[in-house]
Amino acid sequence: MPDLSDAQLDQLITDIGLKRPRGGSTRKPIAHGTFRGARQHRYRKEPLCGLCHLAENAYQNERNRARRRRDS
Image (cartoon, rainbow, N blue to C red; front, side):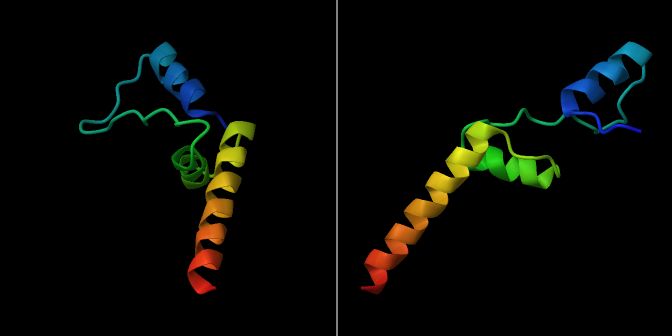
């Protein structure tokens, strides 16, 4: 069975007419282009989109620069 994205899964649930369990909620949309978005992709075990990949790299580079400044 193919893996479905959150949007596809939500649409399928709506199309079939299923109700979500009480207390169940829909997932928040991914904050693409941010480090938080990259974390959301990883949590959901999804590949990172290009924007989130760039944002994660920028975050890690800044962390490394700050650590190098602190250590020297």
